[in-house]
Image (cartoon, rainbow, N blue to C red):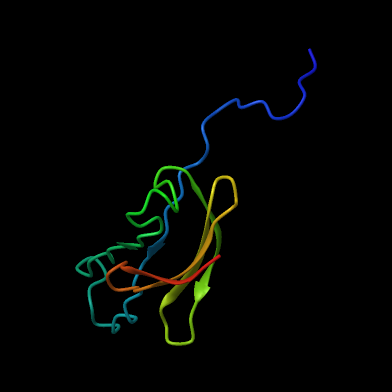
Length: 101
């Protein structure tokens, strides 16, 4: 059977982004078992404005670092008609929209 256009077979992937702090290397005398695992900090990619981005259905187009050490992310709505350039705080996950296109 031939289908024109897209055939949705399964749900779209859910996107999340986290920053995991890397602790300094333990001194040789430190017991590696007693060192606790770092806790990931989840970034707020979609924010609270469903008119701009559906928090359950959006693209993470690009991620990187700003020169000041904060996280840069570009997110788009599913139809790719809205692009947000975000500055994310790596210690809290809080978002700031730097540019809305």
